[in-house]
Amino acid sequence: MPEQVFIFDTTLRDGEQSPGCSMNLEEKLEIARQLDRLGVDILEAGFPIASQGDFDAVQAVAAEVRRPIIAALARAHPQDIERAGEALRAAARARIHTFLATSDIHLKYKLRKTREEILKQISESVGHAKSLCSDVEFSPEDAGRTDRAYLIECCQAAVEAGATVLNLPDTVGYCLEFEYEQMFADVKARIRTSDRVTLSTHTHDDLGLAVANTLAGIRGGARQVECTINGIGERAGNAALEEIVMALRVRSDVLPGFTAIRTEELYPSSQLLARVTGVTVQRNKAVVGLNAFAHEAGIHQDGVLKNAITYEIMQPQTVGMPSNHIVLGKHSGRHALAKRYEELGYQLSKAELDQAYQSFCKLADRKKQVYDEDLLAVISESFAKAPETFGLKLFQSVAASEGCSTATVELVKDNQVYHDSATGDGPCDAAFRAIDRITGIPGAVQDLSVHTIGQGTLGVAEVSIRARFEGREFTGKWTSQNVVEAAARAYLEAANRAHHELKRVAEAAAAASKSVHANPMVDRMVPGGY
Ligand code: KIV
Ligand code: ZN
Image (cartoon, rainbow, N blue to C red):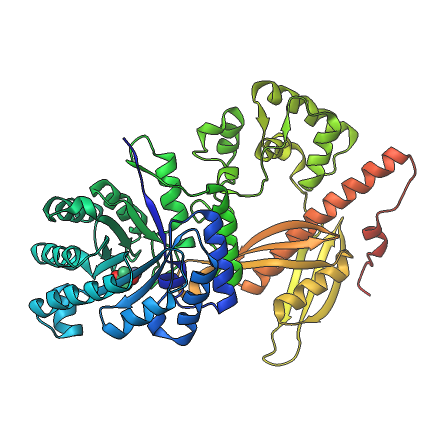
């Protein structure tokens, strides 16, 4: 019988400790409200003794967020525990989370204490916390590298002093799955009255195993998991909440637990955290990355087109990703289809729409709902390819350490050569502006990423660009040993796509109205430069 796995979110404590992720009080409150909407069971709001800011944040979260248990971290020291208790005073449901390292490495080099001293400190500090709060969690820090027999003694001491939750952290992200699972099985089997405490996982991602280890911990008997949104946290991070939740949901056939998380709030939570911290989510991040549900390979599109189950183990809307997805069904008409294509950035001519509609109807007959990927697959073969309108013949740029950089470009179109120069904030910007002067459609770069292929200065740069032309976005990608040239060519590719698409739209409109309008871009083009 599956049991509930309680989600202990530590985004505002362990997550906030990671470089670049610090938040002010208002930001922490905003995240806390979202974690409440998400449905986390326990929300660790901070480490009150660490700073006045942390204390204030825990106090404010405890006063405002009433549904989840609010936890505060404390070292196994009287002042820490007092401070945590004080910060939690207004909480509807409070938990003091106290921790003390138990591995020989930490005892010898960090704490310089004997095992006996540590055992005594555990009993005293858990007892102290219990006198302030009925719900007490104890973490034997570095449990993953602690001698097993001694770990069990420490856990027993904590339980006898009143701990309600035993959290076994793999503090340094060292454990392998089978080891982490076994640790839980051992503690569960050997702690007297273990049925009165909840076992909890806390994993770090130094070897990329945080989520896998969390699931292993659940298999070993854990019923609480500690995790953070987007997996932010010390060093390589903590286990990512969204990945654990979706793994439990998607693989409920073999995993023994379920959560009370409202999964549609996963993507909004991820986005909010990224916005607040400025730490963006990698595109291919599992569950919440922008590419997590994008099917680009033709074989995948084809598979998804035939049946989404071929390449989709979960649906974007389940995690709250705005779609992109389901909008149309077999009752949708030609107009709805044209409109959806428009929203996707395609203005189809009448002939193109006729063709697309035929394919759509066949598809809608087979499938209940038609996804954006399906629509894009329908047209990708025929309309998406843009011919190279302008070719780059020559390119020169001068980068200045101060002031403006300059670039000169020579483009060819229909055997005509056009050249122009421009200045800009850096050599890439100067090149883009020079290209704009020739093509006549100025673009605004929305996103530019450089990926180096190969090693050191011998590597080549792959530049990907997303730019907005006349209100619509187009992409381009190019690889070259010269990063500025790669950027210029990637930008030109996006401009060519824009040129082709805008021209097609203008022609379609002209045919429709039977009146001839000159393409504004062609009018603005000046052979031989200005
Ligand atoms: O990683 C760790 O051991 C911790 C404890 C304080 C629980 O974050
Ligand atoms: Zn940690």
